[in-house]
Image 1 (cartoon, helix red, strand yellow):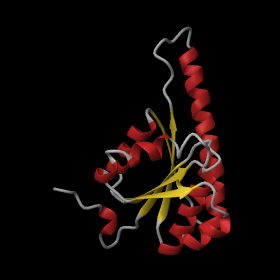
Image 2 (cartoon, one colour; image 1 turned 180 degrees about the vertical axis):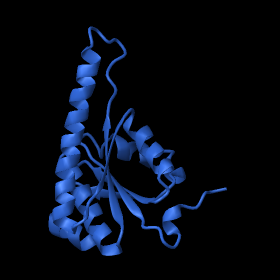
Image 3 (cartoon, one colour; image 1 turned 120 degrees about the vertical axis):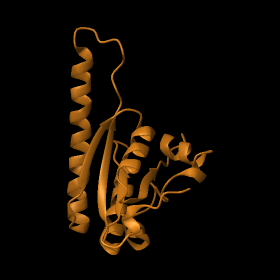
Length: 164
């Protein structure tokens, strides 16, 4: 039995989840999510995921690496939040987690029943659309708990605004 998302019930506002990273295409996905949220009355969640440090923790280096990675993720989310405020006048919810990006994304979606759309950026380079998009396009695509919007990184801002 598929559990119905709470975002579809009266009195609940849907949330769009945008995964923030340091890829150049990320800004396109955040722009699409912000514009779409403004048009449909939704809110936005910005997720940054930090890769855990290696298991060997020599003289506390792991904690320093973790703190630096978390600060970098927070800076990326802060910049994306400023963009959302400028584009849509919305104050985004900011989340930083540690773990495997796809796992943390799924855990957040399962934990917050108001999240109703996942917005991902697709890379434009020769290496493919990116690991998250590739993972979702495989055998897991049909079983994903919410719809996924994939924003190609080559679209112009005007095209994204028109599509949102």
